[in-house]
Length: 293
Image (tube, rainbow, N blue to C red; front, side, top):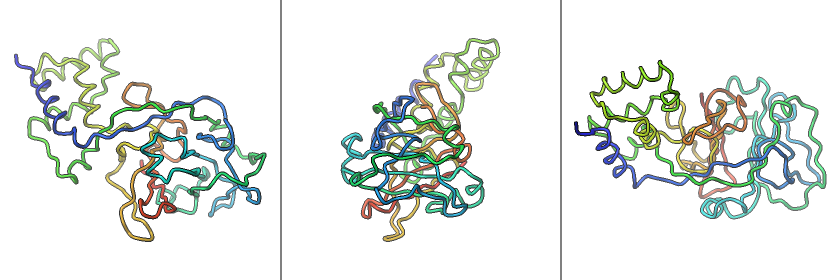
């Protein structure tokens, strides 16, 4: 029988090629690094006369969720972000984020780019419980991967699937890793899939390829395409009202230990979903962090 899945994978690959982007997955070490290192949690760079950032709602110290040393990022992103400085996201992990804390520019977060000069020689972490829950992880490097847009993003770009492509692409919702487990239940599930689409020749690698082509990576990543939890949610720049550009994705759902998904370095930080750091290309000091679950 002719392999319909292989044909659809080929057509989708050609159709989506113009929209393929590079993304970079952080490779981390369980340590803090220096005050100017790219990191999750840990000690941030602070100016000499600066106190630890406080939540604008409860006025307690906020967690350093992310610090990126821009001059150490991959060249394409480094240039896009201005070439220098530290991007810092402080986030309150108290109950301040339960109502409007998901919105961009909320008072329970502080997002900025700061130049790493005239800083403190030593930074003392406030006595808050979050640093036990979120031990520091320094970024030691970046793993480059291809990334493809979310289905809603494709519609906005004017890309539509044929009926046959849509039918086969729906298989991307299957979990190839579970099917690969080799249990009786996983074998039965794979057989049911083959019968449903009348394609006895489908293999697990086909499902992995479909997932790769039709789903942006959901874990922590630099650039690529956002993995939206509830739909497209680009923020608008408060100055020029233009749509802000995607820079970094923070996943709060736990770990995805496969070749397709990356780890979440701050699991359960805000909710079971993704947060996105966005920046205005014309006003680089305008940075947003909305999240959704």
